[in-house]
Length: 454
Image 1 (cartoon, helix red, strand yellow):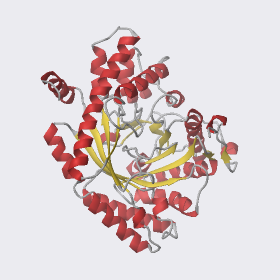
Image 2: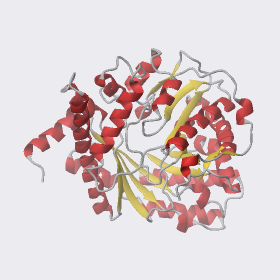
Image 3: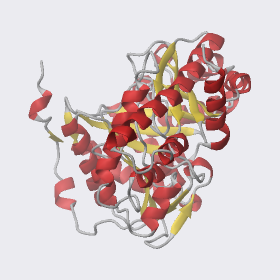
Image 4: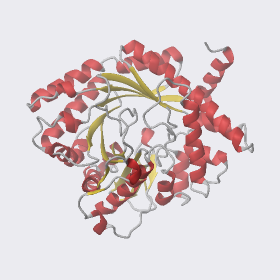
């Protein structure tokens, strides 16, 4: 039971501090849709998704009305399509056909995005994996709601550098094929090291093969709530600062747990996890960068930024994990440049660089996220940036990711408008020195010595 003061406090968080449930994501296994015939595979995929998720959007809206809690997105994640299409897809165009089926199913159910156009290639690529990866630019440019992800490395396997090189080329090609939309296709494409099976956030969501047939995962968000709480303890000690973040994260996650359990009951689908990430939006007052400034920085990117982010991420996890039966996904603080007004401002004035963001990813939940770079950035340079981030994830046994957007026709000093939650991205400079010879090597980087724990 909750008392009147807690009800009032939650209402204030929703009305004044931008608290929301960022997404209810239904994970759906497509393993039972596999067939040797591509047409039958597509038909089974469409039927499975539209049957399983037919009430997802309506249920989300009902819960939002019932509790008075904004639920921003309703999404679907599916089994990595490289696995599902391996028996029937004989060409890249066959995989694009599956992407079209997924897009059609997403439109039928009314969801915001569908994730899982994915391949898991941390140690090597099957022919199906490679075909799917090479089909990504066309798949993303010919669909509206499909998101794609590729896992390129892990702490146990090392980094597949052949796939890293290929993904640099595919990111570049995706940018070119969506150049008329500000290279928007790249905003729906992310690469991972140590990708989790239960992430509800796009563009990286997929339904892991160890999951149940269907599952409900919820992602919460509350940067504005944390910032408001910290304003009340301005100038206090680190102990007070940490306690305030923990208590606030507990309250935010409790809201997510409530919504997740209710959605599970109404849909008759098992509850999976709550992802307690602080996911910002371009709205004023809903920024992770502003939290870092409230902790004591003039701008995100100033000396001390990595330490402040480490503190924030750790306390969010400590507070949130006590508020839910199952915490998973990414869980922590997101630092996407285009989706966070404070990050946009810091990047625009030069306080925040790609190199500083890379240092910050050592202690945050994800990685280099929604970063726009000049349109003439070479594929090998993109691969080098990806390799650096994969190495951070591999060595530190954590999830890292790269969602980078070479915006065709734009250069440093320009900006690109994506709209909605994707926001506005300033074009950030990249190191212009070559890594061609490094990326040109074949094979994989071995797993670190501390991966041998058997």
